[in-house]
Amino acid sequence: MEIYKDLNSPATQQFEKLLNSQLSKNKIEEGKIIEGKVTKVTNKYVFLFIPGLKSEPVIDVNEIKMIGIVDGVKEGDVISVLLEKIEDKNGDVVVSAQKAQKIKGWNELVKCYEKNELINGKITQKTKGGVIVEHIETGSLMFCPGSQISDKPMKNIDHLIGVQQKFALIKLDMVRGNSVVSRRQVVSSNKKEDKAKIIEKFKVGDIIKDAVVKGYSSFGCFFEVSTPEGTIDTLCHLQEISYSRVNHPDEIFNIGEKHDLKVISIDMEKLQVGCSIKQLSPDPFEHISNYQIGNKYKVKVVKITDYGCFCELEAGLSTLLHSSEISWKKKNISPKKMFNVGDQIDCVITEIDKDKRRVAISHRLTQENPYSKLEIEYPVGSEIEGVINSLNEYAIYLKLANFDIDGFLHSNDLSYTGKPDEELAKYKKGEKLKVKILEIKKSEQKVRVGLKQLQTDPFEWFKDKKINDTVTVKVISSDSKGLLVKPEGCEVEIIIKKSQIAMSASDARPSRFVGGERIDAAIAELNFEKRKVTLSIKLLEEIMNAKAIKEHSSPLSGKNLPFSSLSEQLDDKKKKNETD
Image (cartoon, rainbow, N blue to C red; front, side, top):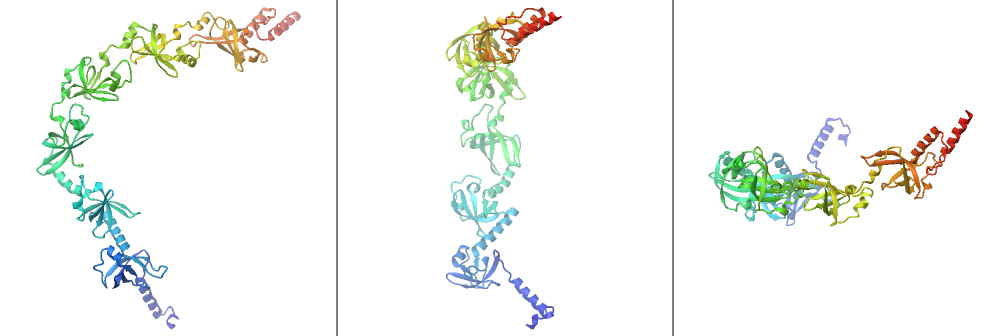
């Protein structure tokens, strides 16, 4: 104990240094991979010695078998293990050789992934969606999707199982500890060098003889080209197959057929060669000079879409017949209801654009324009009979006479006096009507007609009237807003607002009228263009009041005016004159 008495003595300091050195050598932590020396091997367990632990860790032989070293383990060997617990509830040390191997293997995979290096592996078994690959160096298991096994479809991969080969790491999930590899990238990269050497031999304009049809899709046909250096695949796009319109390559080609190709593009970065078949023959658009705008020609329908028909003037010389140029009768007609593929129809060329290689045609120009005929036989202002084809919430459509043209009859043009929605409800599909043509727009294929224009306009009753004129009206009804009246001898219904009933606020009460009364009112506003008229009893009272006072006339009886203030004002004026 005397050695610890003086902590600054040389002996004490030397002892402290030796003690710290020994502890640092044996410092261990849970979760770390450490080396253990085999001290004993039995049928069930392998015993290890790890300096710094109070007891010997024990590993199950089955775990040793799982990492593949049970046959070679013997006393004195060193095994890497993961120290899971220094002491469990039973006081034992818990270690795992399998987990240590997995962590080491994962660290090795991370290094290869970061350096973009290929790894050695072998396919051990098939699984759903792909195969399981074992890392040769560490025994780690990885997943290879079916799409990453080869660059070509493979029906059977039994010959690849158990064979050591190179794989590329394409994905590492650090959280879950999963890894995904690809054999396809390795195969493709090996082929890229060979493919580049083959493509270097070609140049734009070369003719490839006897290319074999390998497959096709909706956008083109794939050909296999054989050369002394090897074979490559090339694509002939759908637009490069023929000058005629082609819906799908299978309309022209069969698998295994041989065709000549012309090289039209080379991409060394993507290692692609673009080819054309149609460019091996003359361009039919060079014959466009044989056709003139405005002339009629026979065309063949080769394809029908929702927006029109693709037609051919001659083999390979295609043009579009838009749906708007099919018929005069209907603007949005369905081409499928009018034509079939293979039909020969008459069309007029309306446009030739050599720069855009575009030709526009029209089928309706080969027929008489029914709108022009209608305009000649029934000019604007004419009367014509029609049958109601359809109705909606605001208009009626009529088939006009024998023209197969629909006339547009708006609800506002049904009646001068009735409410538009109520008038519209009176008509049904199939009814015959005589209407007046109000407007013809040939360019827009529209005809507007009217029904009320055949009737006498009740507003004409006001043609000899002017503002401040007096009219006698009959009260139809009253409400809080005013009076609904109708001038005698006229069918126009007019509202006299509450504020225009009388000068006196006490007399301006709509409730004083029950309907049927005959009263006089003055015209306050009259607009023939807008067909608007405003009546005012208050205005008439003011006019008559001013006139009576000016002429010193006796008070009016007021029988036709619903006010009482005028006679009082006349009395006041008379008294003033007598005083003077």
